[in-house]
Image (cartoon, rainbow, N blue to C red):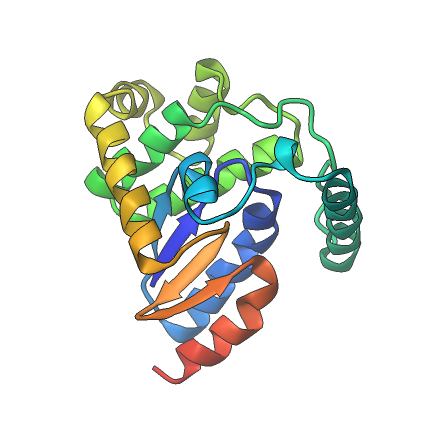
Length: 197
């Protein structure tokens, strides 16, 4: 299964642990793609958050508050460092995916999201990112150097184009074959789909 994630998305964070549980329950494979939704939104008819109407922005905060209470995940509704710079964290996740495997990449992405949304840490800052890498048991010096290589930004651009070609338009999107499940509130449907094999 392919997992198109934003490292700035509260919805990606709210679904992270449950997604891992669904995948484990069915013995499925999961490959993460931290794509550029700044490219995907305009190409698919969406708007970045600052350009959405005041009504939509207000409703988003109401929904975040509802889901925070429902799931018991202590997110900050308006975290101090949102939106954080994504280039280096995404580069590190992609580098981990391509050199260490899917699980370390997913672990890093989910740690970045928790730091941003629960701990109000600046995940775009190199020192903060180094600490997060170390916290999940990876070597920060080598992964930061690797993640900064331009080839991973180029890979991210290719992954973003592939996401658009597959019909992805929002984060998170979970894709199984031709089936797209957009949003952490679609995890029950994803669970049923994986149960089919």
